[in-house]
Amino acid sequence: MAREAMSKLDAAWLRMEDPTNLMMINGFFQFAQPLDFARVKDTLAARLLPFKRFRQRVVESRLPMRPPYWETDPYFDIEAHLHRLALPAPADEQALKVLVNDMVSTPLDFSKPLWQIHIIDGYEGGSLLFCRLHHCIADGIALMSVMLSLCDDSPDAPWPEPEPVPARRRHSLLIRRLMQPAAAAFATTRKVTETLASQSLEILANPSRARELTLDAGAFAARLARLTLLLPDPKTLFKGKLGVSKRTAWSQPLPISEVKAIGRVMGGTINDVLLTAVTGALRRYLQAHEQEVDSIEIRAMVPVNLRPSKESICLGNQFGLVVLALPIRIDEPLERLLEVKRRMDDLKESPEALVGYTVLQAMGVVPAEVERLGVDFFAAKSSAVMTNVPGPRQPLYFGGHRIQKIMFWVPQSGRMGLGVSIFSYAGEVVLGVMTDAGLVPDPETIIACFHEEFVELRQLVDVLAEQQYQGDVPVVAASEPDRCHATTRAGQRCKNKAMAGSAYCHMHARKIR
Image (cartoon, rainbow, N blue to C red):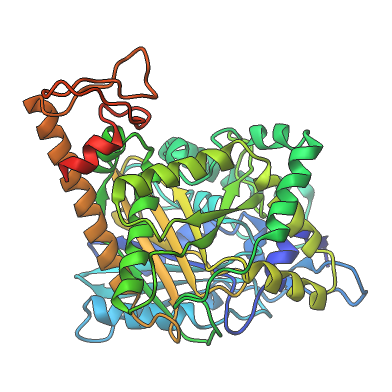
């Protein structure tokens, strides 16, 4: 039976699996109409199974210091991975959350390939395609590319015709024929997935930039020392002993155009705006639970995509990690956004992502007991995992039906109690939160706080725009964009720093509020 050694990074994510912290990426596609089970099955057979990882199981090596390996499952049956169920009455959002919470808290069967897809019928008169995929198969960028390869760019696409998986001894020509659907799937993906990569949390629009930065050995060593010497994160509701049960919540979609508009006025990117709102939401949540917020910051582990931008669909994990300190202590939204932007800009110009990548690779080759020590070491320095997977700008179709919403949740690697995921699709962006039920039993409250923060940012921008229209707020001098240097109606000279790309200095904006 053919075997393939698992990569160091994939092995690291496999060994992070813990009963209280499952290393699954969970998510769903939502449809307004019921899905046809037979068509879903044929679509998976034609477009998913050609990726061999979805027919392979994980086998641990019997030799010490050897990574696990992939082995073709001799008993593979797609029906063991595809299930259909009806959402219990009253089939509303609360019923869906209960079901989702149960699924994300239940481990996959390690005797089989590590994925499951569930068709959930009855939600708002339609269906959901709920996916559970283990992180050792691939990272979020690769898995989303695979899942999007199942989709079409129009509702009248033909019914997929799956080819039977060839027997092991059959001629290599049949093997090549088997891979043709995979090539076609990738072509479909490239056609329908014009992404917002430059506006995601990937930190580096050009991953090769990260590799260039590692050539500076001094900078690499400095960043490694920074990670090693970080003090433990402060004790908050987001840190503590984990249990098996998890809780999930998701936001209402936000128009990306509105997020962009806020960023233009405030001088930040889409990510700066969203991270500012998330940070404010966590501050509000802690305040509501009578926790100190005015002097604390908490850190988030942020995955950074290191794939070449034009690489074809290639499974496996190819990303590093950076540590972003969230300024919970800052109450004023504009000041908070400026600080978030400053820290993000610093990460962009550092080799920290490659440092994180190197550390993860090392953890994949040491004994499991040593890796657990490493996981605990870095988990103590962070409270959350925060990620963004960019999606297509245009609507997609699956099984002849338009996908109304796409949502996913990131696993809380390193035994952390909070995961925040951002996904953009068809001109909208959604926020997902997964928490440990014993630490944060109500992640929907964090989502509500996020919406409140976003509304406050939007209202502030409206005020700024009105003040500019009336001439009460000066425009930044074009010759000196880093300073306001403007004259108000009262004839006073402003010497405060302006926000990059903004027409106002942040001190003027604060006075307007």
